[in-house]
Image (cartoon, rainbow over all chains, first blue to last red; front, side, top):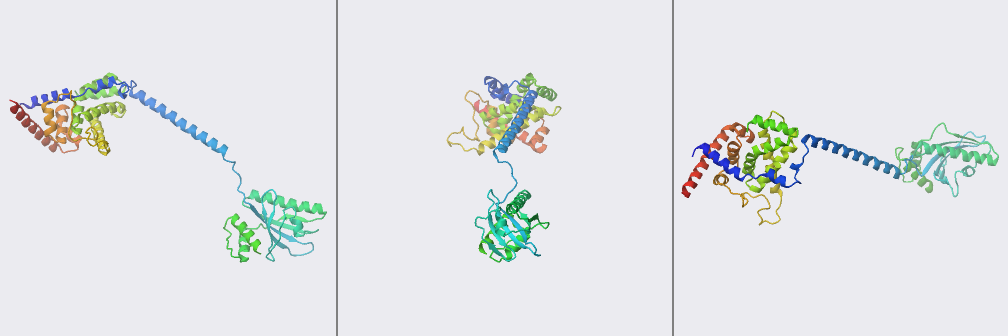
Length: 227
Length: 182
């Protein structure tokens, strides 16, 4: 048998067994081959579909963001439960002043949580003392002057407490019919002051100025309760 | 079919000409089928892969570069699809180990209604997969030996030797079968 005959026969045999998938596909309309769109049309359709999908995703993200914004409480300035006030009380006619460390609970009642005479390093009983009767507790008298500085977790909280403190002392003076000087100190108190004081108390607590304001406040309250 | 004509039909298909697709199919179906059949050795899988090849050609026609070798592009698609299918089936775990329809089988099967010729049967019995592919690509699809060597990543000499060796084996077996029948 010649090569050409051999090849013809092989071709002929394969021709016989080759399935007509085109015909079969035509009998099954679900098949993708029957899609009458041209490749260009398909491409355009895919592009449009992609755009729609992207638009939906963006819309979904926006809706979720909006809901999250509505659900989550509005962003507030950070606050701490306590505020530390260092108050210098200078009695009328005296040269020196006595430093007090006051921790005030920063809620509506503004209770004094601890009060320490930082010069003598002892705490003073603060049962039922609030910011409003703190001046009385400190024995502020006519002609005295009070300078103070505040440490809080945010400047807003510090400003609020400063105003409240000055107002309470002024009101106290007005009610008593005395004249006092209340002013914010030109030398603001620092966290390193608190840390040094707490460490000097030597009550088993060691803190650093880099610790959080909350840690310093809690430590201060603790040492006040022990001394 | 002339390669330039096939390239022209592919270009027309790119512009959505359905008649061009039908012409391509008619001109290449035997070559595509015999080629995928030589790779997978299973009639039903070959039929499925042939169908998938034409579907892929249509869907991926925009990636065809006009002026290129359309037939080689087409056969590369066919080969990749078939090899992927074989690999996929090897990874699948048949639920009934007795059922040969599950999982890829090395031995080939034919539908009862199809009549397999003596030569096709000898090709399957005597030639190894590489030889089968070389013979199919050259004899049925009309690829040159040089093109086959490029497609199969084999040296031209190897392809030529394998082709001649396969043809010689087939002829001998065929003549023996004919002689035995007589």
